[in-house]
Image (tube, rainbow, N blue to C red; front, side):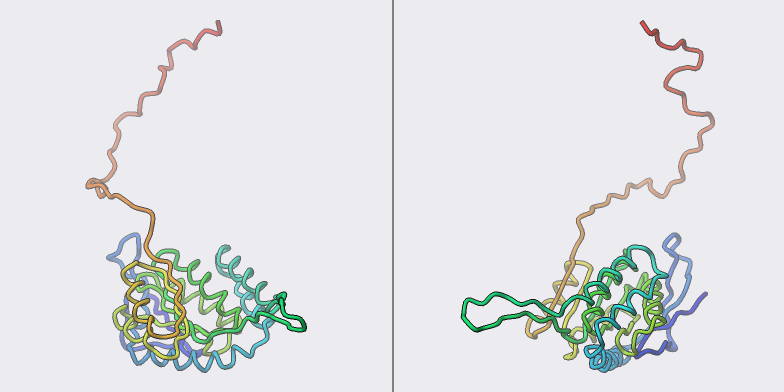
Length: 259
């Protein structure tokens, strides 16, 4: 069984406790294991992200773009997200607007907001983190990334690709562990400036209510529209045919007349 580590402050970290990651094709079989982080470890991740953001916001947009496009070992869709956001990072920092008042100038300016908490689900475990992390990193923010407990490996490999490409220490931190402990420690941290969450309505709404009294930006992709029905015989093996299925027309039958 392989052992993967969490990324905290630019260093790959392990603990004395682990969570098994199981084969989705046979959930009884463990494939790998990832660190079981405590609430103190999660707070430490926020410490690193706070320091990482202080340096990241001063980094040139061209340097941000370079690191994102170096991680080309990922799947095509993840790379497309990185390349798109790298292009956005190279664009101007704002636009000038018309002002009805004479001798006045109005403009917009893009600025990073700070430490962003990223929570991704078990499905699409690579594409979803890429689409969340690429824009916030391109904009100059820092991140505390919490991949799903069931499928953390893709997120950890994605973080390693960015780390190996030269992402500064503390800009991206990955926390793995039990959902209850992490959810309890992270959203209430005063250094969290924004949360992006993909998951169930119940959890998303619970996080949103906890953030309501603070100036924390929340982006949620909640619920699902694809209903599934699993029939009772789904686990039965398919029948073994003792003879080939009959064809639509016997081989001896004459072809239809052209007339």
